[in-house]
Image: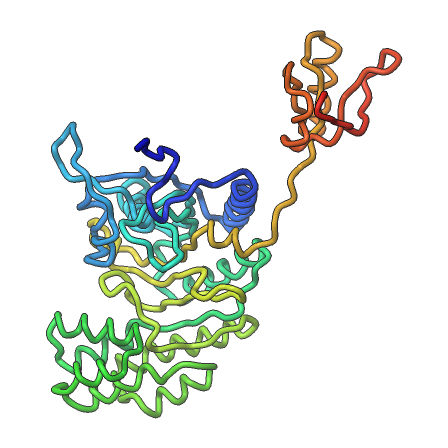
Length: 390
């Protein structure tokens, strides 16, 4: 049986012209918007040695990363599953700035397994990162930048869920959980699996046990932060993150912000405020972000960091279609006057397609709806009336 050479691996897809046009239009809008906010574009390599790609991310990226052996060095390399650690490396070692760095990026990543049932294994990741400022102002800035990015894509968020890893960390330390059990509790909270959570915490001391058990129920509007102060232990390591969340609630009062104290992710990655954006018409988060101060430290230069990323292919699917640009069909430019007329049209922003011989009746497929013709010695544009005979 002849192999179907046109078939692609599961969850890997081509991007045909209409989708590619929409994705590219959004990429340009977003990177231009990031630049207007002072974020500089960086382009990391598609693959690196795995110890660099996975540094600071622990097991969070390991199982999602394709690995191969470099034939030049014999070392194991990985195809990036997330660009953020690469940007952290660039900030730490390539730029080595003393002050604030604002960086942005857009590029393909590859996942060994899809993140969801309908997810692509080759997302087009776009994002922005702010390095060098540990204050809450940086978290406010990147959340507002995310809001602006979604506005630019014409898909404003229905809500922004905000949480804080500090609350979980504080309760877990007081509960004296061993590392393996702490990771299991973290996963149960992510899934909001209350029965599993109760089973895992059966031997933990109070009031830490009760605090961890309460986290899945602590979600909603700003009022939930007051409820959290009432329910959770009044320890400094719990009060400080709640103070930060209340400051965010004040600063972002014009956005549809909600809070979820069990909205946890990046066990080996995130270190403070985390957030997710949700849009109408999409079952999951369209953007994820948060603080990840530990990643830069893993590269030998500890710098506060916060940012967000999203899959541009998902964003393009949600955003309005980009209309195709109608083209002008021109005769093959065999003389200087015709060539000059074509160049003038292109300089004015028109799409001009040169008519190759022998393809009559097919030019409308390429988007042509007008034709450049010569009348009385002048080149003019007329409507294209095409038939099978050209």
